[in-house]
Image (cartoon, rainbow, N blue to C red):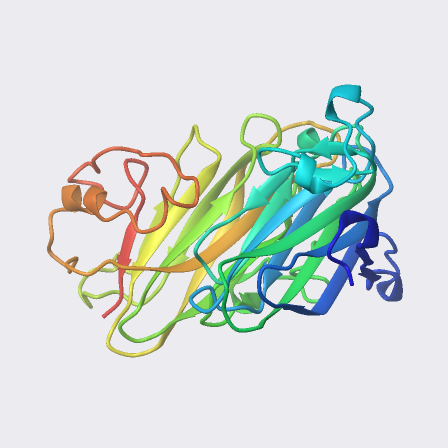
Length: 339
């Protein structure tokens, strides 16, 4: 029973079989029943590593699972001493005899959760990290998968986990992500790399938000391009959108679904790589459902501001009203409309 930090299940090191031990850990047979907790543990050997934790495989409408990450080390503050988590306040847990708050948490209403600890957040705190999986409310048993990816600073900049053995730096080599909800944070752009390409399927009559996040001021700035079928055959640019916010830590594009399932492409590329010791820009990707009903070709672009999809929900800034003459560039979160 792994319902306390002291009984945490040690995650399998699946990276070892691929020649990269201590980089990838997984547990794919999780099941949460009722109000219980599940705990997992994995090592972070090197300081200033990026730590990416994701959880998927569940349906939020049936079981609202939540994800938290803790550092598995005593805090050594006598004021926070504890015998059990019942003595801790504010969401803290009793870990090695001291109440500790989570390093980060993910509690969205989507079918996947993601915690992306940048190397600035991890800092010198190597050692073991704990994953806590919980649920909101009582419902049927909820199966789930959880994974942790650890990426140390590396001047060589190896392939990321989305392109291992199958590079996605060209349109024809786009990594297929399917039609479901996506949460990944095991990807990066190398300094000498042109771009990462992905494809998704937008189901008929459904809408999607594509969101990427990065650390612009300390790691580098990324832009996001979209390519899909144009709703107007006479508009050669109608199937192209670009999110190029020059100051924030995110890019976001909303996609209004068409009358049939359609595959679209998006491209992540670096506008700026900062010299921080690892020759790469780390990023995360979310693809989630949204509701863009009421929008159609011909609507004034200024109205797009009123239908920002999930861009703000996922952490994007409020960019204000789009400039009428340029609805797909820097002034707002872009909207793509499929025929």
